[in-house]
Image 1 (cartoon, rainbow, N blue to C red):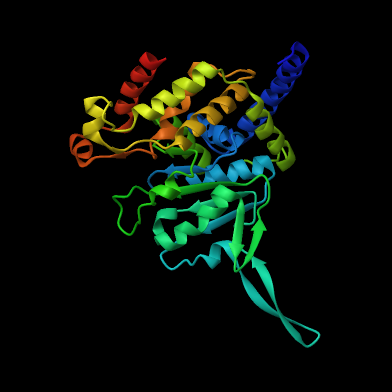
Image 2 (image 1 turned 135 degrees about the horizontal axis):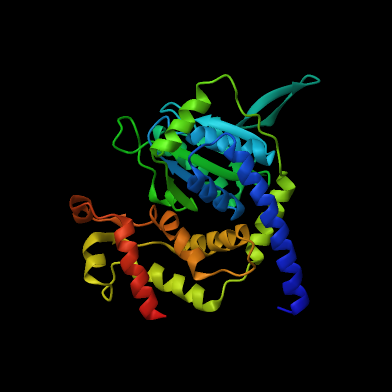
Length: 332
């Protein structure tokens, strides 16, 4: 990259950082006590990915997504997933329309034709209905009958789900989980943050959010994020970490014992893309190793299938990830 090109990129990154700071503050007016969660959701959207939010009811997952859509000025749709929801309720269907005495089929778009789609309680629907999102999340298009319809840009899915232990839920299939850039866990705020939430939500004042960015500006952010530089040594580090997560013959004994299936190449793509977005949000034109380390857990946690032994011992992805990072360091 020439000095002139690098200088132009630095200037553009600086301007993008200022825009994102304004966006972060606007979302923070409505979402209290979840700063890290807001930042991670912004990272995923700027990286052009989809997000799965998991947490118990009442923790503000829906409010967070609505606030982000309003602050970005995006077209927003919400689908409440239920056991009787059908795929056509998501993608749309063909309806018969009569004109001048003749009947013809016309496509009636479903709620998926939007910019930001909230798939609320996605694990309440049957696997057949859940799979209706697959093509849209990967191909950014929907096929109804023999016709393929392109979705709007930008387009992101933010799905929420309650923990699997709750009754009446259906685990998402691995193929669909892999489409999510991040899986974020929503937890109860700390005491001080919870006090702030209670005070703000039991009074007569409600924050009015305004759009501080447009859809076109978000697309520009996403394009700039992909232009952020990531050194080959960092790409090799990520590749080594992904390989270390697989229980192959040359894997460490802990991984062979506790992991059934390792992370897919999409995990590596998610780590690098999110690392680039993090560097952009911090106003830097190059990815640092700290960027990659900061996004590894949400990018990997839903892409690794643990063994029954791991579940019985209470070993989670975070503990295993630390070992894979050490192994990847040695590889480098």
